[in-house]
Image 1 (cartoon, rainbow, N blue to C red):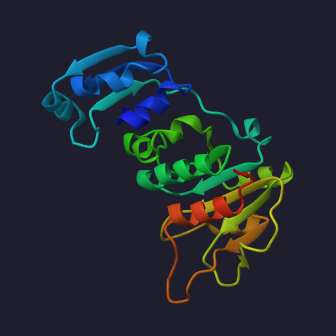
Image 2 (cartoon, rainbow, N blue to C red):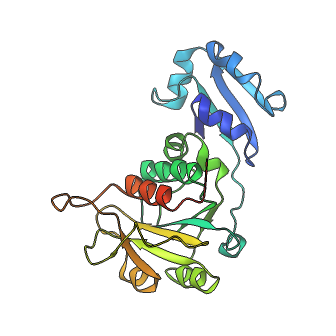
Length: 230
């Protein structure tokens, strides 16, 4: 399920088959120009009907239903130059924020461990402003051996940690192929990931602040290591 006009617009240019769209008369003009809209069943209802169907008032007048498609395997994305690897994050809002930043900073795929939350949940897609739908998502079935696989295919794998003994993110020089690894709020990265990664890196922050939110930390790291020049 995809909520809000912006996310639905991104859905229409994604790989996901669209089943139908539910909207209000006021929002209908915004949808008329979208790709595939002429081939999509569009239901127009009163705002109160839409609110009852959705269950809460965060849809901004548009809701769409789409079909999931199989995601890529890890070997399908090892030709990329930038990956974001996420371990243990069960917060769909954080996943949405990670996907939005990943798309903005040129990350080419999202790699999730087996325990991470559903990246195509309503909340994750909405928080990502629909960018989750344009990001290849690899769901690993074993862990942490995919990190070793990335190492073997030429990636530098940098584990983000607030540990003061970790290397500073800035000033390291940035490799051509890099996978940034972030962990869940609270527990952080597992020992297996920390032992397998090619480097442990930290973002310098004030000593009296414990850490950054996973979405903020990943955004800082992705921006700092981005290959984009615009």
